[in-house]
Length: 369
Image (cartoon, rainbow, N blue to C red; front, side):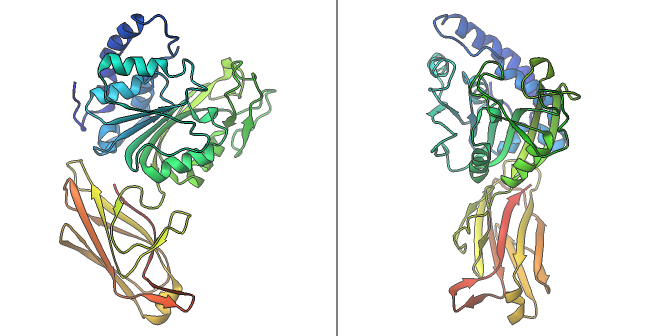
């Protein structure tokens, strides 16, 4: 079963229903394993409600790059997406896993799967399993993390998009309202579902702020469950949020070439006079280039104006001239091609006694949309 990247999420949901029957048969054949009790593939029902416009083509968002499933449970979703032709990495931690990863390994063997399984505590010292991926999945895992900010920021460094879901709350357990405030409730041991692996329950406002500060731009948002009186601990007042977000960290969407200075550590970096990047684009429609940049005042102290020129696969892009310092977005339509070589040049640079490097522009993000 191989899906087209252009398949709508509703088509994937229907295919998942068929694949679920195959998984169920394999699980029945292994009664010795304590299987994850929830239907992981049911997440696609929520994604069918969540995703809008072109983003409903979920596999097209991945752009042919690997998909990483964080907190994979028994791997149902990872194995399903692999059956559609995707490259998958499944990540979970045996120490806190419901069956110590026996289920995901059993299904991998039974399916003859090539899914790469990484055993890792993403809450601790952890290396993302692949340098770049098109899509990360963090479904139902965020409130099980002690360090959600660090985890989200790590994902943003490596993934172009992320689909996540987590529990949220509008009230405290005693009913006091907190909705609209950027707050989080720290669950006590055994307070939620008698499970000591639960930690932070955010309000929607806090979750949105957390995502933004961890270098994510929310594109689609869906609330489910009790949207009037949800709280952090009572099952009858359970509310979940599903969202699709795009990484704004540094250059997560492209592979940098020559002409870039090292990252300053907050998601931006200086360029030299000439700088380059490469990107993959699997969609049939032409991509839009968005180069978020800053023209430093020192550059215009020595030049009346500076002009940025670019080329995509050798084709010139319309230039942009800057006569005042500040933040700018250089947006250009690119040719549709599976591989894009991007070359840029700014006609002015600076250096200082304290920094002898050739310094052109400051770039916060470079991505294709």
